[in-house]
Structure formats: structure tokens, C-alpha cells
Length: 332
Ligand code: NAD
Ligand code: DAU
Image (cartoon, rainbow, N blue to C red; front, side, top):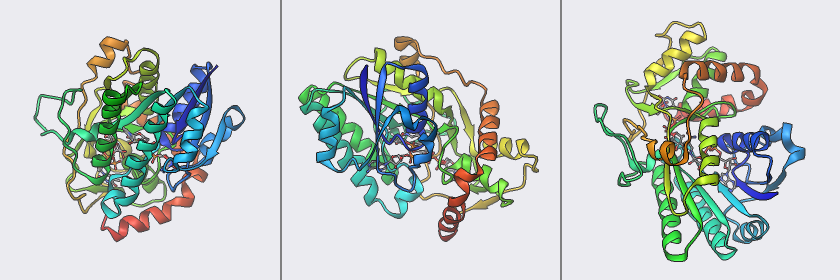
């Protein structure tokens, strides 16, 4: 058995990763380290709780991180403060978790000579013009816009430096926007689905022309496994599935699928510094590691996600009022 430490394994992508790993990669024995912030939910792991070890703790706790890393073989680091809008209101938790937390993980990984995989985002590259024929590649210069993306960029840079200066056995992946089950309802797609379910109009920032490159969370996580199996130490891999859609288009799909007129939404205050477009070129991952996305029909994936939120009202309902009250204060 290979002992794997998954940080942030009670969050959206991390919990989907743990489920997928147990199902498809039984050689791993998993320990989840998660602080259970507002974004983490222990119930995401309910059906598999007997097959993993769960540690309720914080990645900013250097002693705990050192101890857990000494006991594991592979570290997959998902834990982060992940929401741009929150980072504009209060950047400190982003600096603390995303930078200091990552520092603790890579220091312990180099001390104990462990394999480390760093989960990052396409937002570190800034944004593209709508008509730009180029997409982000592993060579695109870093140019982050928000407190969130700048702390992710900072953590990527720490990992790169630890590889070069200390020989850390690390890989990095930069993925585009994920969708699927267990995504917190502060995020665009689940916010709109749950708004419709509670009979509130969806909320679109600005004109909705901003483009995101959507990928199903299981495709992100299968790519992480491809990198763990075959990735070259020191390399960065872009993860994306050619899923570009503007926000208005995505909202129209949701409205149509949920039986509402496509004009049934409100335009609200735009996000300050709102990135215009993200687009990923994942040809390195596809050619060198033979990875392919499975969920290539976005509308179908979206329908399944809508169904998941319909079937799991008890999962999101307790948070809905509070999330919307916070957005209301921001005029969003
Ligand atoms: P999320 O906010 O849903 O989950 C984050 C998890 O980390 C939660 O379980 C939370 O409790 C935990 N956490 C936060 N601070 C912690 C701390 N100090 N110590 C221990 N645990 C802590 O986030 P997500 O959307 O699942 O994102 C996971 C990772 O993937 C992040 O690193 C994010 O930057 C990256 N990413 C996300 C997307 C996306 O579309 N959501 C795309 C690309 C990359
Ligand atoms: O690109 C990867 C990134 O994708 C990840 O690194 C982040 O962790 C993740 O949160 C996501 O960032 P975005 O800012 O793109 O995601 P969000 O769901 O917040 O917003 C998606 C788009 O929808 C964005 O253009 C803002 C817009 N939006 C968002 C909300 C919450 C709206 O129009 N209305 C909304 O209510």
C-alpha cells in the first residue's frame, strides 16, 4: 500500500479526489488533513469514512504537518482558501493558508524526502482577451489579478524554488474552473442552481461576457492521477478540457434545464478586477501522459450536477441564507 496524505480532502475537489481514488486506485491508503473551514464538510466523506483516516487540523500548524508527512509516502495538496470574492473582502486567510500552509507542506516534504503534488489554478496566468487565439500553456508568464490568485501564484513559486534549490520531488498542475457534486454554493454554478431551487433569481456579474473554461471535477482528478503515475518531477502540467463558455451561456443552460425563461435572472455588481477570460491548452498532459477528459458533453455534465443539488438539499440548505446575506451586503 502507498500511504497518501490529501490536504483539503473535505472540500469540493479534494473530497471528489478521495472518492475517485478509493474507487479506481485501491493501492492508496488515504489520510485526509482538513481544517473544516466554512468550505469543508465532513459529510462529503460520510460514505467512505471507514476506509480513510481523517485528521481535523490546519496546514498552518507546522508541527502537525511535519508529523503527518513523516508518516506518508505521497502528499496531494488541495487545501486552500479558494473563493475570489472572499479574497477581495478579507485577504489574510488567503495569505496564511495558501502561502504559509504550502510552505509548511513543502518544508516537511523535503525534510522527509516525500513525493509532493501541488494543486493550482489557471488564474495564476491572469486573463486573456475574448478574441485572443492563444490559450494558457506551461510557458505563459504569471500575472495574477486577485488576492486569491496572487497567493496561489506565490505558492506555485515556492514549490518551483524548492524543486530547484532543494531537489523537492514535486509536480504542479494548473487547472481551469471545475464543476460537479459537493461544490460550495458560493461558487457560480451551484449558487445559480440553488437560487432557482429556492425561487430566487440567479445573479450575473456585469454583462456575463466573462469566459471560463469548464472541466468536470472527475476529469481534473483523473489528470492528477496521471501526473502522480507518470509525471516528471519538477514539471508543471496544465489541466483543461476545452470547455470555454461565457457566464451568460452557462446561466442560460441552467435556466433552460430547470424550466425557467432564459431571461429570468438579475444583473448585479461586477467583481472588482474581474478576469475576462481563461482558456487552457492541455496538449502537454494529453501527449506526454496520454490523459483524455471523459466528460466532454458540458450540458450533460451540468444536468447531472443540477440533479445532484436537487437530490441533496440537506447538504446545501443550511448555508444558503448566510451565503446570500453576505453577497447582498456586496451588492451581488
Ligand atoms: P474548497 O474551498 O471547496 O475546499 C478547500 C478545502 O480546504 C476545504 O475542505 C477547507 O476546509 C480546507 N482548508 C482550507 N484552509 C485550510 C487550512 N488552513 N488547513 C487545512 N485545510 C484547510 O476548494 P476547491 O474548489 O475544492 O479547491 C481545491 C484546490 O483546487 C485549491 O487549491 C484551489 O486553488 C484549486 N483549484 C480549484 C479550482 C476550482 O474550480 N474550484 C480550479 C483549479 C484549482
Ligand atoms: O479558474 C479556476 C478558478 O475557478 C479556481 O482557482 C477558483 O478556486 C474557483 O473558485 C474558480 O474561480 P472563479 O472566480 O472563476 O469562479 P466563480 O465560481 O467564483 O465565478 C465564475 C464566474 O462567474 C466568474 O466570471 C464570476 C461569475 N459569477 C460568479 C458568481 C458567484 C457570477 O456572474 N455570478 C455569481 O453569483
